Length: 90
Image (cartoon, rainbow, N blue to C red; front, top):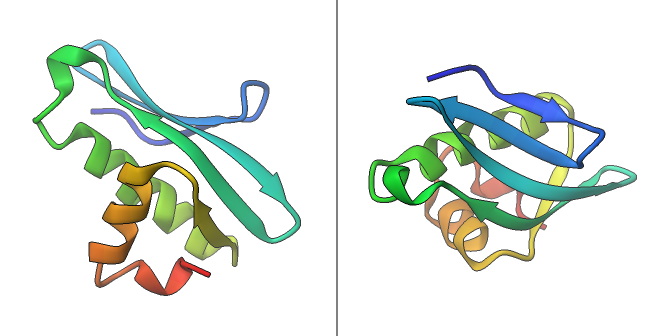
């Protein structure tokens, strides 16, 4: 597993595992991070890869003082269930 990358040119966070990349498309407006879509390659689904990506993404947002507005259903559910990061929802 690699570290989280913020690919600003593509407006997405990325994380590699087993030679494949999971990603989260986003838009940043002021101090708000909109998460539009989270996806992992088919072979990584069910392995927790998307959850690890969300944890790293949420930690980055927290350190940057950002609030998160999830558009993606997966991101919304993950954040609501997270004791450590649900305060980022706004």
